[in-house]
Amino acid sequence: MSGNIEDKNFPIGVFDSGVGGLTVLRELNKALPHEHLIYFGDLGRSPYGTKSPATVRRYVRQITRHLLSRKVKLIVIACNTASAAAGDDVKALAAPVPVMEVVGHSARAAIEAVLPQGDEPVRIGVLATATTVASDLYKDRLLELSDHHLSAPPLIMQKACPLFVPLAEEGLWEGPITDLAAEMYLAKMREFDPHAVILGCTHYPLLRKAIEKALPPGTVLGNGAESLALAARDLLSEQGLLAESELPGRLEFIVSDSEDTFRRQAERFLDMPVDIVHHIDLDACEGREE
Ligand code: DGL
Image (cartoon, rainbow, N blue to C red; front, side, top):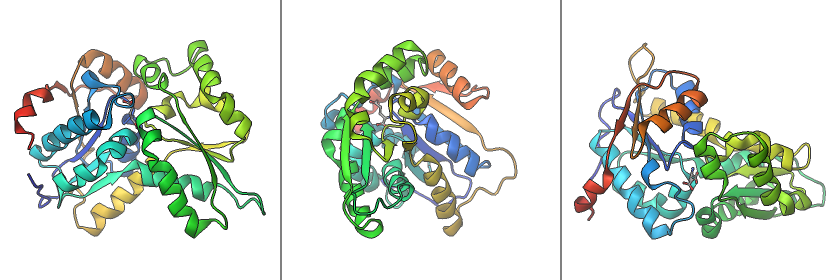
């Protein structure tokens, strides 16, 4: 199936395993307030980060096909694990519809945030899901980028923090349990004393306060959501595909499990009423897998 990008008023498709991608959606909505955004949260099959790449790839292909059936003009992979397991699949399925990923923007933001450290190599930490860490996606991207921006390759420490995703989904963004999980996962990272740490899973910015507390003071912490959103605006503008409307863009949410839990977390994070939530069972699309 190939996409179609003829119409300026077609929506932008954004997806993640659950609520994490809302951290990207919020930036997209800020940068592109007139665009119709369709957000797909695969709650019924989350978390992705502890599943095999083959399984995540199957889910991601289904979601991509679904978004293309909705005639999106751009797909944003708001899930690092999906990029690690199936970024190329999404691009191949979607072409000529452009696909943007948060990974490259997060790596670039970290490289740009760290100041040269004299003769000492820069130290960058990557917090991500087990699948993303195992793929070395961030490590490869950071080493590629450092060729152009740093005098020496950075030292990189990666750490998978699997409990962060269910904590984020449950709404436990702060508090003693979250602090404890951050302490446990980040003890070695603290010793590594990174100059910058990438939140390489879109759920992790929701736990930012706990992560910050567990790291040495002054560690630069970030991800590329904002930079991706600005790049999406540039891309649509260059291609003459910005929505023509002056009205606030519609936010449409599709989930593959309980709508109420999702609505609660989404309203809390986005700080606005979330009233367009459809439930869809993508396994029903299995038969369409090539
Ligand atoms: N938010 C996703 C990511 O950026 C995945 C979380 C998960 O489902 O494990 O990797």
